[in-house]
Amino acid sequence: MDDCNGQSGDESRSPLEIQVPSFTQVRTCRSPRRSGASPPRLGAAHLLLWVTMVSVYFAIARSLLGDQKPGLVGLLILLGQAAVAGAAWSGLSITANRVCRHQSFAIEPGQWLLVVVGLRLLLEALLHFKPGELFSAPGAVVSVFTCCLLVLPTTDRRLSYPWKLLFGALVVMYSAPLMAAAGHVWLDVSLALPAEIAVSAVWLKLVFSLLMPLLLAGWMQYRGARSPWLHGVGIGVWSLWLLMQPRVLQLVL
Image 1: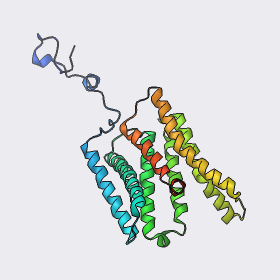
Image 2: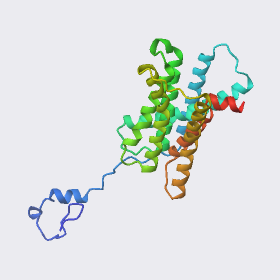
Image 3: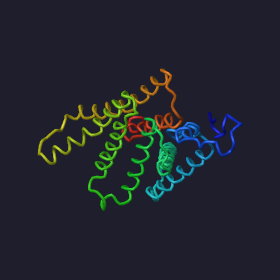
């Protein structure tokens, strides 16, 4: 019987009597095909990429601020926003690079949140330059774009159901104000809530969006689930991005 090197076990045969291995035998001797690319390892190149993206954010902020001076507090806030945006755009670049190279890999929930923040910040930067020439309501466009990005992970059959429920809840919370506005404009139906309830709903969405990914990631880690570093970075960037929303900063400052 032939081995994986295609050599006959019976050395007494003449070369003319050696049979060519069949197709089944050749496939058996081949190494198993990899089902997907392994997650990228954190290295110095990723740190350089993050520094580059932070520099890009500073360049955009400089062009938007013009001659205005942010002051000490504003500068600290700008540094935090640059760090978050740099991490989000770095994760977006890593994901886009792997997709363009046609590498089959599972995107972790935290990594997808990293992509959501990166694309949202990129769209906000583009709309800040010439919003009137593109859309009449840039904020609504950004919200719709965010909802579409949050829907996509729910279609992945490899994603666990707790994370699917979380993404579904985020979609409902981010789309509710849009549906209320559409009903008021298109159907002439007033869906306005009292000021106290509206403010409470905004804070409820913020707290839910902040705490639930952290709690779910901690629970999955407690159960022994191992995730690549992009997952943890994504959860952290999502949380920091929510904490740097203007409503939160006004409350703190």
